[in-house]
Image (cartoon, rainbow, N blue to C red; front, side, top):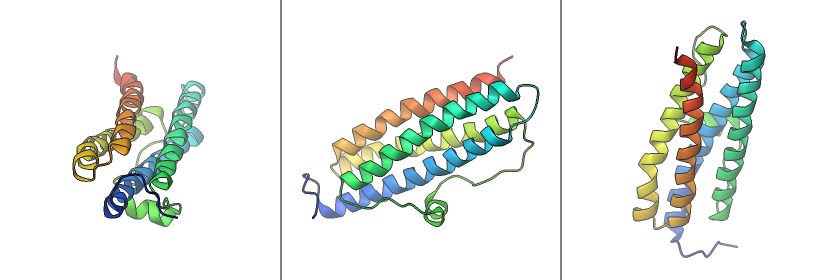
Length: 158
């Protein structure tokens, strides 16, 4: 049964496509953060292991919310690794050492990429596709990603 929520069918599809890209970005960032949690090495191992765990927990909640928003507007969320890699704006892996600062630099760049993508999508979703609900919903993601990025960036202060 089609979701009759006051948004044209073609607009719901366009919004679902944007959300699918966001979901792919969130999934790739989640996976990279899990990688950091599992593989970080160095004298700060324990604290960074716990730090990355906190971050991937936040990302898991964001991913779930995006997928549910896609379903709310009547579409299916992408859910395969192949789809995520085709849709993401992020690179899956970058060469670096398994030290905390190497992981942090990579993850910080990904958060900033996601923030820019969300900022660039908010008005399009609201103004062009007439979906204030999704526009409002993803606006909150900016704050979450900005705080996570700040937490990462703070490791570079001396």
